[in-house]
Length: 145
Image (cartoon, rainbow, N blue to C red; front, side, top):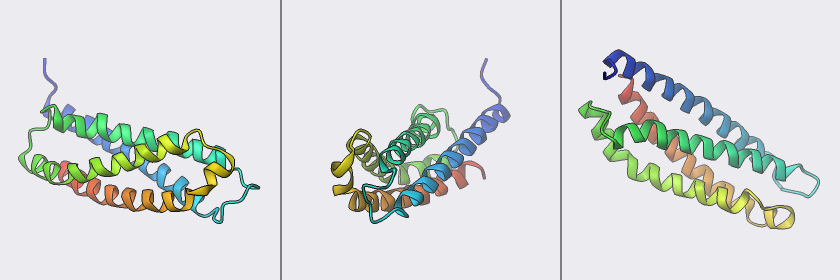
């Protein structure tokens, strides 16, 4: 038996709420880490970066395996949502790649290795996250309309 339109919409709205909450947590921790500049050995940077990487991957995964997967697998039937998704998804995918690369680089680094390129890499990641957020908001506003 297929889910009713109301059930599907309710599930979509719940996924969107979860995504927005995870996004808020990621951005909050991103800002906290950014506020630690200049990065010195006295700061608890390793634990903050590890926590940030975990949140970042959770957020990216929820977007991909939740909202975007619904569109990719054909569960989304609204034409306007599909049109917006087609337009924004390639750029969201690029931002996702940058986030995954950041995670892969920093999830296990410590000491001087961690601090060497962190400011530049955080800056690049921040730009990509800001772009992703803008594009996600376009898609979300279409989905909840």
